[in-house]
Length: 221
Image (cartoon, rainbow, N blue to C red; front, side):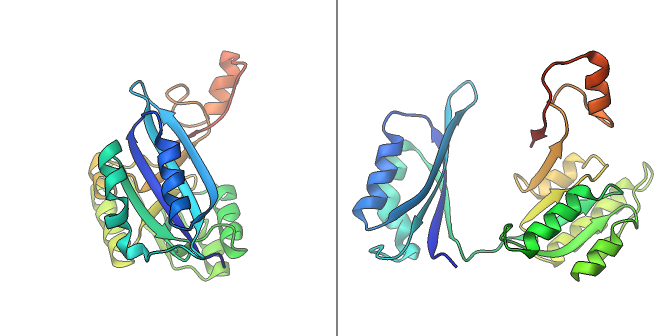
């Protein structure tokens, strides 16, 4: 297993950011393995993910805030850091379509997805056989217009009980309420198989075909 640090950064875009971060890691003995960055939004916000080998790095990561503070203040950076040993606890939400679920479970089993999956939540029983095969606790919580709030309370209770860090919606065919997402800000991933905001709801690829669009894709949010 790699022994590396992973740094996530967010700040207003400014000239010299890449150089400052790379120089900081280099001058403290780190060997950069990956450096991915891009700018987003009308205000050109800077987002980056940097991973470097900790072999020979000259200080312990618990002291990182102290050493990184001058750069943090210079560029108004929001950041968080972890190591390659960290395994987030991921809950999977699924309904009846299981192709996304099966792909995730296989990739996690072979080590491609570095995470733990402590539970699976569904509003149908269809996916239980996959949970049983991989030894993952499965919870079936029916969701209707009448019981949606109560169902989400049950879901949140399970997520907190299992110390979940991240929620992946693997073809979970329910819209999470604002009250739910407030409990897990920036901790829910959904992939919608069209370019939002076009073709929302069910069967977006059918809608796109009927409209005759020439460019199709997916939206991760």
